[in-house]
Length: 243
Image: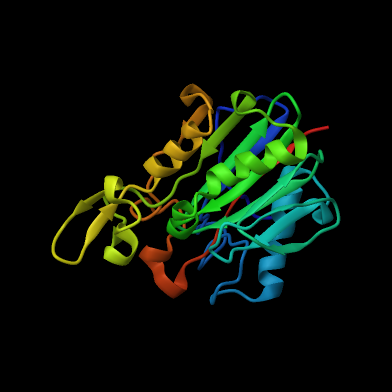
């Protein structure tokens, strides 16, 4: 089995295993380690990568849940035995269950309720961020498990950085406080700031939110759709509660 390099947050306690898989192009040539086929890998190749990740995390493959992003604010409660869920967010209170969000420039949001023992994994691209998926995830944790904002620990994964994330007005209009105009058509978007605002507005203390500032577009450790277009792989932003 080839080595899989991952980047881990520091905000979570030992009972949580979490992180983001790196591109790992040296270990998985030529396209790197990918958990979703896109247009570069076959389904069987992707399945071998998913199985390798399950081995790394020391959980049975059937306890790895992957979601198919649909770029909305849909969030599902998931349980053992489910495979692919068409949504942009997952929550669960089951231990030894790995929630995997697929990213390649979008931000992955991982949440742990340290009191009620529940987790969430959210995919927050510009569409999800404009629809406030972060706060909807927090609200659903409260509805399903009684989670309180002051008990949540959060990690924002590497994503497109504010100096590289170019958008046009169709996107910029949703984030007027968080864009810098470059010319008549182009803007630079800081996608982390509105996500952070949404979480703080939910009542989560700022010091319980860890923000990774690595840029997936400019850092070749990561897959980037904007950088590699149709040749881009997909990374997993994952979280698991231990027994």
